[in-house]
Length: 352
Image (tube, one colour):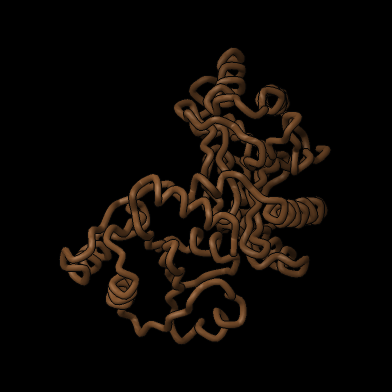
């Protein structure tokens, strides 16, 4: 049994719940330690039941050893009610962040007030913030593949190629190196497009004497990486050099501040205040970072308002940026893990 399930039992006991209906795919994957798809989980101290359909039932039976597996034909809420009734559960929690409105309507209709449905939030996500040794190993492998891809790009980024061509080359390369897929739509931004923090890669052709910003990550056995690098073609202007140096120093200041017990928003302020001191306060428009694991954006949040307390085993990005509309944008993104002694940089910055 996944040790995390015992922690869920404790949380349910504290909330006076008899069970928890898990509908989030990442949460189901986390608790079962398999890559779940279109499947659901009922957790209770009496029995754990995994609900899936004919497409995945054989796979589930092969890999799941500590759950009862129940085949469903689309009527998952009816199957859930029947299971809860058989186990004589009285108060069952559901994930209010992940269950749709229509899903809640159907769930309530099946339960008909015979079993209390209780909204919950963050029970499993709070556990997922602290990565196990196995999770960290997978994240490091995902990051390793990403860095290999950046090195591979050095000779590929040339004037005349389109942003989409570069993105396509990356997709092919990472799969050849063992990634299951990209972690998100790869961002390849060139020239003035770099001033859009989340630019959609386009058919624009790369030109000489301009920047190319690439934000990418890979999925390796369900776990993600997320890095951003900036490549320079031809001559580099004085302003570009200045902004790049500011971003590098802002990131270094933030990383130096990371250790267990620190409030996440103070990490954000380290970088944000430095960028503001250099006269670019309005040009840094997003949070400094976010957790990475089974999802590309998860807890903890590293933002101006985040009250998350950093703990050993947390993995997140540090990605300060400056964006000058119509001109260019620069962002450098690395991933760190909070350690017993402070922090380790999972992704070493490339020499540029």
